[in-house]
Length: 191
Image 1 (cartoon, rainbow, N blue to C red):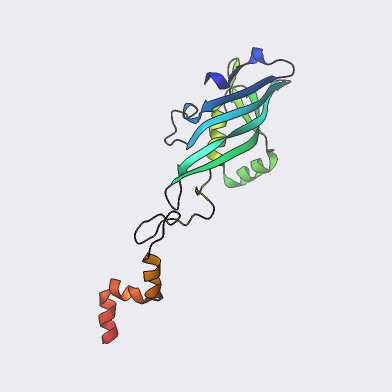
Image 2: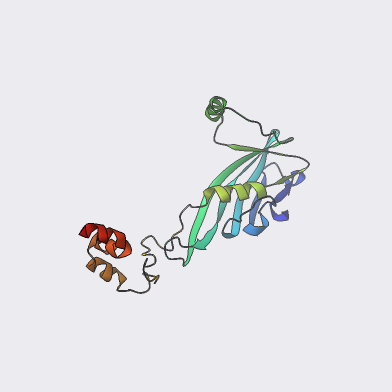
């Protein structure tokens, strides 16, 4: 990803400013099965060197796009959040099995700053952008907070239209309509 790759020689004493907009599909790692439902992502911030480490502080903004979980119409959820990443030169640490007790100790010791490793003379921010987008993705998408959804009987979008299905179900007075669905219960009732 060229727009989010910064050469170490381009980082001046006051850092290098980054203000780019990229398509989220271009950030997606090859090994990832699913795409994050985002259009374009704007990355703004500054990458600075402090001693042997590099720090990026900035914001990610854009919009998540996915069908509404209630009515299936397109839902748009804008986002803008701050990020701070630390980069160190070196090989990535191998993934090892850690028992729960050691993991709890490590979580207490770690601060909230995410540290990543890089090799060579460039820092590529695209992987961290992708991870932030995937982790921040909402679990529930709604087109509007008070979305009425679809009628469970006829399937009409209740945000746009009304139907008489609800009135008919209210006339059945609760669970009385279940007898029609389960005729064997009705025959036992007569015995």
